[in-house]
Image (tube, rainbow, N blue to C red; front, side):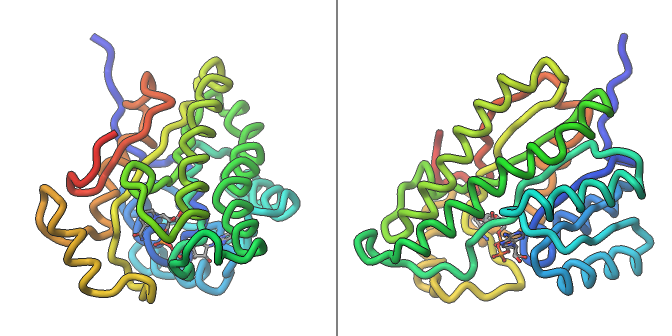
Length: 256
Ligand SMILES: NC(=O)c1ccc[n+]([C@@H]2O[C@H](COP(=O)([O-])OP(=O)(O)OC[C@H]3O[C@@H](n4cnc5c(N)ncnc54)[C@H](O)[C@@H]3O)[C@@H](O)[C@H]2O)c1
């Protein structure tokens, strides 16, 4: 009988956009399980603050000012991580334009806003995967986890750029899974439902939150900790034979 490794202790885990919100919780929880959390956020001050929180709790973290839309910025984050830790095992493509996004009819979305959402949410995930690839190949295995959204199966109105971007992330996941399986690099997507974080989202009022909770099987608001179990599994050696998949973690509102 083969021994199955289940944890993330000692694994080097890059989490983009981990300076706040879901990514911040994920970084802290992974570090609490012994992973080295690499916080790659465009807002370097927030990233360093999260790294400080992790260090204060006895964990290990690095923080880089990283813009996922810039190949140079990603390259320096990868270089710095490999110089410090010698490897990259996991990439969680979490950075996204989300909490700052207003809801509007598709024919009123300025083209610059559309382009920005696609650039960060889709191109950013594509570029970050390319940036970590040599280090994962060097390590002999890897895990790429792309954060999509339950808005894809729900198909809600007034977020056409966001939903289009998060649908593309699922396509990217499937395509990369086929290209990288031979390198023992798995690529999966996680689709969270509406998740309450410490960051106010002005586009979602309390009535809307309550109506979404009413549609869930598990009748309470979703919090970032609800995503951690699935992410730990997908980041660990025990998910080695699972790739190209999309997992909804939304309290049971939507179905794929
Ligand atoms: N909160 C939710 O309800 C929810 C639901 C489904 C999916 N998601 C997805 O989960 C992820 C995190 O969501 P959140 O609620 O924490 O969002 P958030 O808006 O609070 O945080 C996003 C983070 O990404 C960073 N970021 C933005 N552009 C960047 C760039 N170009 N390079 C690097 N970092 C950049 C921001 O600085 C910020 O720290 C996003 O991809 C979002 O689309 C969120």
